[in-house]
Image (cartoon, each protein chain N blue to C red):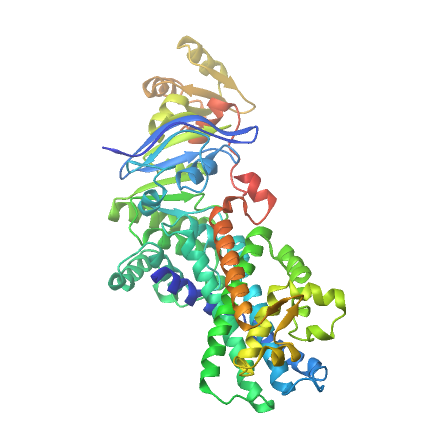
Length: 276
Length: 308
């Protein structure tokens, strides 16, 4: 625990000390609020502003957690990982430290938008909602941190990670209903959305923040908070199951890959490698 | 003295390339041991295998009685490592780097501050401990790494090219710290270098080339075995000198302005010098160096300086 705590603190410090990235990360979600605010001004949603904000918070949390995990790559290339690897601590600790800190950064970003949301029309009636939303953010953060670490360990350098991240996360984000409701997408893309785990991240988070966990399924389906895929209904419970399964797979798989990967081959340049 | 490092028939291959070829050596506890050789000789491969980063291809490697391949965690606890390239956490301060290291090595919490103070005093960095590593000079970074490598009181400290890329003054300082430490803590130091003068200070030197150990002894014995002292004499009467040299069957060669004489024993040389002391205009006697040792065994010089 001491190791995970120390790594957590270290990763947070590193994130805060990188001022330009910090400012960009904190401001970026507000750009989406302005762009997508208009799209959600329609009739079928009861509370458009809350609806949109919930989507943006969910998207910000998973996007941020995914990207923050890539700091692992910096640690590998800067040589610091070597210091970690010759120390007696287990690699599982390092992976865990990375998950926890990515989830923390992501949650803090989510909370900031959450807070600002209250000034622009976010409405919540029960304090329980706030607690649930917070738990959901941490959970979403952890799931995506697992995904991020998996991609980071497999790509092993920042450029590749960015390319992969754009190729994977951008479509996944846009086909999750976070910015554009799935029912507004053309048929084929809607089906892609149904198989996108992020769709359920968004729908579950929205159901929580819109305080509709007890609402009848028909109402949820009407607002794109649940989906009827053929004869299967994907409500909040099913969404939670999807997330737990996907999260377990991502975290398990990334921990496995991370503890097996040969970091000795990760030097700054080919010349260094030849030198060894 | 007991051997703290034991290596037997160690071989490391990368694909078809053999980086280290069947080497064996032992390092005594509390000594300073140097691996001397040109770049690409297999020094870093050996050190990286000993510190559990690489896996061996064949052979047996033990540190403090623990097997490097099967008891990695125990070996890691017993060693400190300073790699050729910096492995500091650049975004963090010196103090934060050391604290993190203490966490990794389970240094008791109540001892952490005291130990940080101790090691930073040793390398003269106590006053700048709040500085971010990225803002430090190359020499300071190296000193931080040495301090960090020591803070968990390892039994063996590995230094891979500890002074490469440092200016002469900083090099001298780094050495001062290393020696101070070896005396104060009696830890074993295992280092690789391609600087001759650094190897001279060590208790024992293994000369490595093309993945094989070609000589292994104290610097004194190596020089005694492989090199000769040479006298360079300039004389106004070469004929007389050559006559004396021939009479005593001493090897020499004639250069433009001087005679180069291989000195087998000093008495002989003194005799010759006294015989023709009136003619001698200049004399210089050069001791054999470890570079001569390397030259003698391989026919090549170890390139001095330059990282690559």
